[in-house]
Image (cartoon, rainbow, N blue to C red; front, side, top):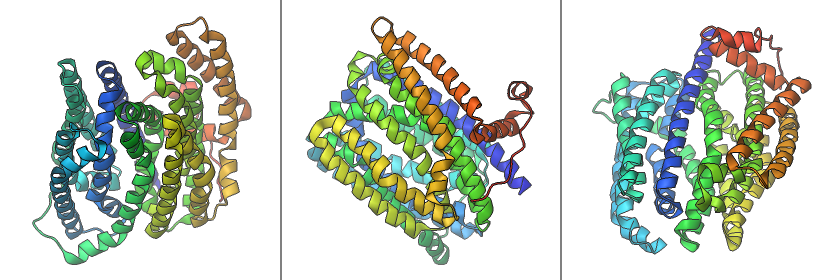
Length: 503
């Protein structure tokens, strides 16, 4: 357990560095591209991504997760997974090349034909590095994954900006995607010691697919549930509204990627390694979710409060239509940051059938919401997405996850109550301040003032409330970086003692 703790904490450190640096770099690239291009170009690529993203789910077939979750793993399992992935990716690439005219016809946008052909080659690039990346996740070796993701982010971003500056338009975004895949493939093979054998074992394949196919089915259903809104927007309203909606989604996803994705990538393999110890898993889960809430709730509420000056400052006036979408989606992001952690428990416990059932339900909620909301345009779709998350999904997903480890839904909600109340209080102060400044202050001043005051108010409320989540987070930060950065000890104090916890 001590070894697992140290490996998990090191994983948080390296995964956090990966997400922070790559997302910061990609955010800068996105801002440059947003100024060099516009909603129309982003909307064109988003139309294709809706379809190719679905196919990308099928490439893996859940085999990567199966590799991470299995207690016993042989060379036969790994080689079989590799060749299955490559075979599926090759078939999908051929299928999308052949179907490119149909994609262009569906959206009534001729330029999508070549875009679809180009982006379909990402399937093969993904398959060629899938096993190596899964093995690094399994061993919690996020140090090498850091260099892989940095290579992909830097090289693809540099190419995209270069092409956009010289007038490549939408092809600069396409090139960014392809170069990222090529760089990830090259770096993963360079930094991973594993190589596939020329073999495909039937028994090993069946063992992996028995776990993976239900997961892949759930991901497929969930994918369309998450993306049906974009499909309908592109088909019914065109490229510009879809570009606005997609940009808003990407901005909301950025802070979530910097927090929850870091933890998600570490916690699944960590919990898989102790999947029989339900009591420990319950304590770890409660501690993790309240720390996530402590970080993501103020970010999401702050995003909603400062959406107008932030968009005007970062993206510019022609992206003003995304302000209302961002404000709505921020509340969905807040909810999803905590209830999406249920996937740790479902996957580490091998409950793929339950994942599949909840995936079907989630997709039904999303499809119904998008079909109703699209009548009122982009804002209607965003509002439907938020209602689906808060009203129809949060309870059933989290209740099912808690039941696996003996934690009631009411206990899970009480666990995040403190961070929510502190974040809500901070949000109210920031909204009042921004309304006072908005009539006579530049967007940069509004954003700076809101962030400074909001951070101070939130810190005061957290300290005054003596939230457990803050003590937990302090402990993790000191464990991860206390020895390397002594200033953390001077700023945060000595490592707090953590009491035991039951479900």
